[in-house]
Amino acid sequence: MNFDMDLHRDAAFAFGPASLRTGGLLPYEGRAFIQRDTGLPPAVFDAEHDGWLSADNPILVRGLVRILPLAWQGVPSSEYNAHAEAGQIAKLASSMQSTGMHWAGNWRVLELEERREDSIGSYTAALRAAGATRADCWTYSETVGIALVWAGFEDEGTMSLALHVVPASWVSERRVTKSVRGIDVRWSWSEVIDLYTTRIDAEAPGGS
Image 1 (tube, rainbow, N blue to C red):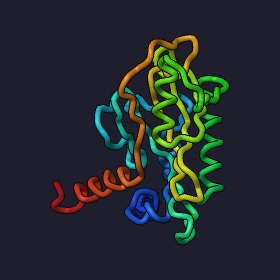
Image 2: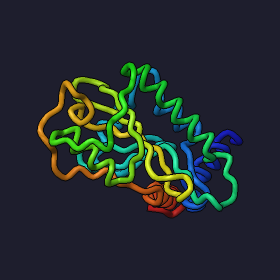
Image 3: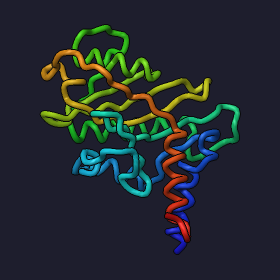
């Protein structure tokens, strides 16, 4: 019973309305779920709409892109949140890099400022438009690529961390194709909060 209450509390810290201000980080169960030795959960590839892979793992769908929000820094002047301070987010990023190496070998850093007229250039242009500051990428399979994406700035209260699941041709030089129109990888933590609020309302007695 206490274990269940702890899990609910951790999710509320991570995804509740206050997290827009104080910051949010995937709870332990969510981190374990997304970092399994066997690879990405199959539900990632099946997702067609924004929702949940598990109780602690939101997913946002942007056309061919699946975005797995991992962390949000929050407003710098807000109260301290031990669940989402800069050191914890950096630790999660390092852990995700290790997971990516286990799945697919060494990562490659995407050149975000390089202008290219191909599929990689289309993706990096979309990353720039979304405020990305760094993207480490892997060729996960013959058809799937993944990218660990940092966006925003800590002192502006806009820093976030997310894992993108994309077509391999968007991150792989060997699989690169012609340019792709309409890529949009913008997202916000407020969307995660909305998903959580909707779920909690539906789970409440009398909820739909």
